Length: 360
Image (cartoon, rainbow, N blue to C red; front, side):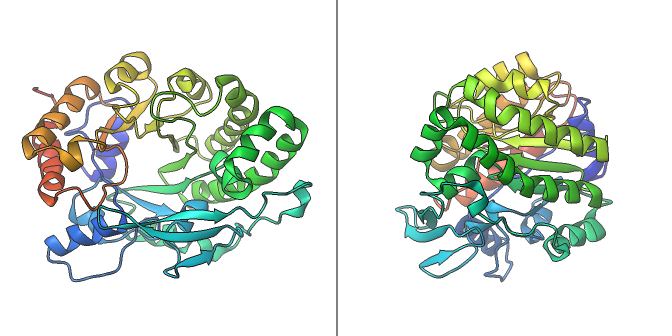
């Protein structure tokens, strides 16, 4: 099978030759693996427009072109910088030998009228050069995904601040309805363009979960966010009924999984096993949802042995891989403290033990 055939077969809840795979990286981890592979490049493509060499070198089954707020994370090397949304980011170092950015100024912390904010222009054709390039060069062999995470909830709190957002969702409902409608225009335009260009999957996302519970009540999710996602999903599938939709949310979002199924979600990411049991999600929702992720990145990948990684992969294949509907992957970015040996063990185990019929 081609990579694209393998991916689409699994998403359609059939068993391909093997479980499709991928992994995603922080820039430091990406560079470290490229160096290990003998690729002399300091360039990284994490959250950038046209992918990079690593997914092809590691035999991923799809390639991602990123667009939107999530591209701000690593968009500038200055110690502090302002992105196109007016959000101020600052670099910090971590104990694992890497660096990350945090928001240090929310430009709409004091907004009174949604019309005060002007969205960046996502009708500009040059924004889509990266995905055009991926489709032209690799679209026959690989699945092509348009990544547009940090879509609505996260964009809102990046702009307003988390405390104000959560307060206004309960006390300023009229304002929030207008504000969220305005913010959703960017993903309406960008998502529709990605689908028109021919991506196989459009990937959006907002973190509604923390480690062991939801960030907000299911009722607030259903009031403010579910109807807006439903409208977007319906529009994109009207443009191309074959397009698949993936949604990212960290943490425990069990209470709203049925809501996502109801509005037509195809793929759930990242299914963090220390927050939600992948076996339970598979049992309850696996006929409708493809699980993408499931491999523990909080303990096993950074701190486990090679054998621990292999056993983790085998567990997820055994409990979530039957009948297709699984994309095996670490359940978030691999960090610079993840040993190269563990990363390579993930890939080897996924390929060796992920062949159908699964014999685990």
